Image: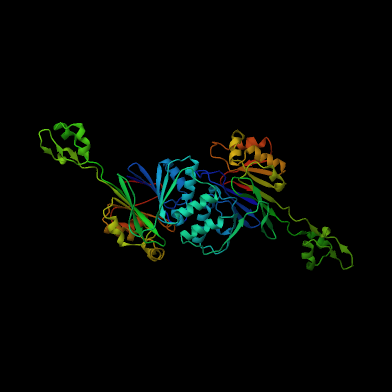
Length: 301
Length: 301
């Protein structure tokens, strides 16, 4: 799993700072998460192949998370896209995109599949045999979801030393990978644990932007490998965080600690701050394993 | 009059090329013309003061001329704007902007004044004592207007040598500037032409993007000081120009020649071309005074 930060600053795009967007590489998928203005240029700069994006998750309909989407959809068309594009986002997103395409008489040649979200409870919005995406209801000025990306346990691994030792016929391999015990020629039963190894450990990534400080998030984020939590402000501006329903670096760290996550990445920094270094300094007092997002930075999970 | 090119490439924004947007400095106004994605970043890079923009002219509702507008409107709000913002553009522009603001619950604190255009004939859409803006109906895939910006003749200039010589009382100065003859103390009449000089020559700038080759434009563009005409393609792709209702460099030059304009600037280049130099080479065979637009370039008019 790998996370590419395309933009991690709040509000207005500037020459050197981009509004929110990121790409999660997970089990051969490229998931685009939020799409502020300029995201398509950031995709190019970060050499991410447009055609590999099939699912876009939009947390909420504030411009700095969403105004890059109409242009990206148009560019997909210009690039000759044929594959369906799935868009997950708040109710109204379909109406907005449809109106813009209609006004420009610029209907896409490929299919747009909208998955509009309205639930205030966490729900599964994507699932296949390898991974699952759930919403994380956030507390912001408008209806907002974070997203929890979870790898699902794959098949067990064949213990090739053991299968050779016991001369297991290849015909049984699939059953062994599926965790089944094997009946031997002499009538005895060989336990699956003798013939297979645990599958690779699954990983989880949680994306939480934008949100007020909310300890109720912790159970949903329990033990995730990586948490991206917004930290628009420092504690010196905690009153602004409260007023605008954003979080401070310390608050993000407090949630990370309570949820016992492995690593915390801070982002969605207000451009009022000349340096983002103090965000880490503030958070690390509460939670040790904290890093700062930055446009163009990647994180292995 | 000064023209700042913020973006002059067609279709998709890229790392080094921006979709269409320009700023015209005219009689103390800053008029924004078209607003592709990333325009607000280009405004910053070109050090153009956001607060001085009070009028935005949108030629048509294709994304590469329009998708930067919602973000710019939001940024104006974040910057604490209080002044009205006038937006001139095709019918539907108000519905689109209003829907996006509504979905984000991000109503502006300042007043948005929409001037929706529907006429297929040239019409005056802005006028004060100093300048006038008229539409230039263009032939594109959707309803599209170019814009003709004309300075209006100002007051005549006082001939200070003459007023001193004839000992004209200051009380008459305003009348002289307005072109009136003056009755002297001895009862004789002094012709205005003796006491005043012609006002500075007025200038005109015409913006034509996007449009199919259309010689009917020439009368509307007659003798303008500067014409920006789109040249999406070279003649080698004239079939694409015809199909997509765009122009070639030669076609743009042909219109410029017929209209006897002073200078021609080409823009809206397709990003399929590795160099824009051939656009000038092609156009100059037809019309001599031709220059190439480029992002970040300015032209004195």
